[in-house]
Amino acid sequence: MKKKILPLIFSSVVLLTACNGNTSSSTTENSDNIANQATSETTAKKDEEHPLEITSKTASTTQLFQDARSFSDKVAWVYQKDCWHLIDEQGKIKFSLADKEFPNTNFVNGSAVVDKARMIDKTGK
Image 1: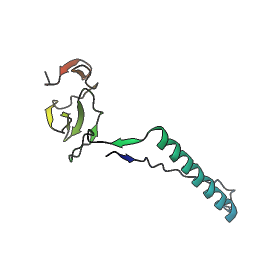
Image 2: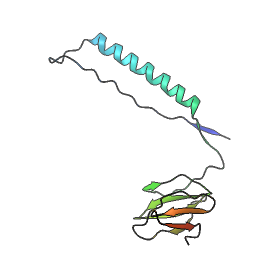
Image 3: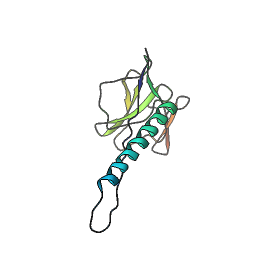
Image 4: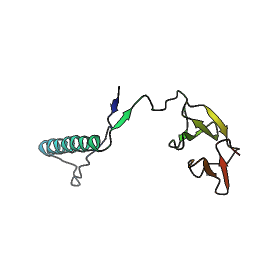
């Protein structure tokens, strides 16, 4: 069963007033109506263009990461506890980078670049 997650868009309208700061209630009501209409139209358009679907193939984990990259080549970089780790689709850590090392690229055809100079495979070598 596919579930759709609808993106939530926040918008705000700022009213600039004269130096005395007075606004009429009809101006405020009109602005609120315009903002609500624009938000509804924008949300509907975004939902049609890019719906996010959760399926049985969507990776999930209960771990918390401070930063994460997209999955590519069935692995993803995640940042947790002061270093970068490579995880598989089940959320298991395959290996960790040394302190102050960072991933420059995601994995493509089994390889990724680390720290602009070192290329590694999925085993960390």
